[in-house]
Length: 255
Image (cartoon, rainbow, N blue to C red; front, side, top):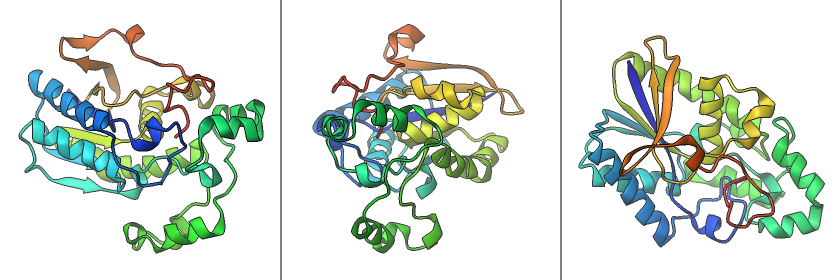
């Protein structure tokens, strides 16, 4: 059996402010720091050890991983960062308050962006795209890979490139892996592993900083998966799985 742990970053500043985040490189809140420490303590308590870690190039995911590994006394393991694990790019919506977006575009339009796997939000304005292109984090990835906007399927496609090229070899080499990333990139991996149809992934929510453990067979097919808290496995019905566009507390449904 092989095992991999997924962790979504702790609460970010834009989560707190109910804003679309995407590729905007915001940091964690104080609560986000605490959530990351708690996730590390949970994993350490249950005897998890990792040989290698993967994360995005966005600081909220990187910092979550740093804090978690510090709690586990595993800061020495190799950490690999890739833009392919970045959050979905939300185009012109990035930085906007989600409630204001609903007022501006209407609930039906926002629901279409939310519920369709293939429909993209409006493209980012040219100035914002130029800033992405000039960001040193993306200097080596090629201009064609810096999106103006992304659908869920666009995000899934680039995430699975990284899964097959980097993470699968780790697992095949019997390494214990943790991925610290974002709601939509982790949803893409869960969709792939569990063979969830396009229209089924919309209601799937990955909560902040609760370790999600997948046990895989030697062909990397899922045997089972579960969330962890201090007491052990968390019953599935106690994990928030559905997203409500009208609920400001559900700050992760689309960014």
